[in-house]
Length: 186
Image (cartoon, rainbow, N blue to C red; front, top):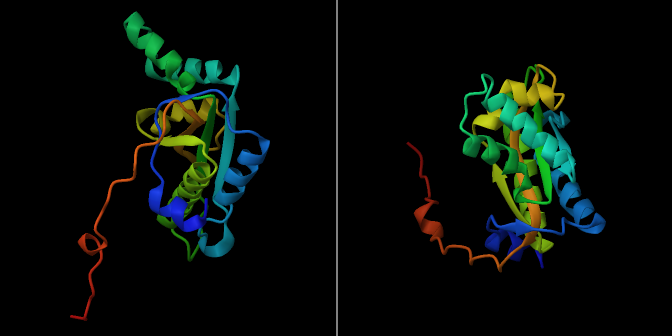
């Protein structure tokens, strides 16, 4: 698939199964992340790859962070334990925030987001299903600590990857003119 075709047609694929991306697909997907826009060449991103039995441990981390007092109903407990089993491979995107006179934290976060978007597009081009999750668990400091993040690091999201159980839906048709307009000055 050529680059423009992937960029124009990428969609999230939420129902995933084995197998995980193979070594060649991973290399292509992971290398794409390293080309994200990066003011100051700070490389503010890093990634943890979670697969196999480590997914069960991640589920235990999710549960511990969400049920500190042990009061969740059993169905909710099982839901947290099963979350990482939605896909055979999870990439945890991490932003390392560094004080810099020209690169504010917002730009560092955007660089990580650009790296994640590049991975999602590369995955689509490789025929790998992928989607990006954020939310309470990504913002939970207990989860971050259990994953070994430093105080100046934060989770930017969990990227689930695997084999699509069905063909990806077509990308929605959006009119460029609905989002872009000429500006003639004040």
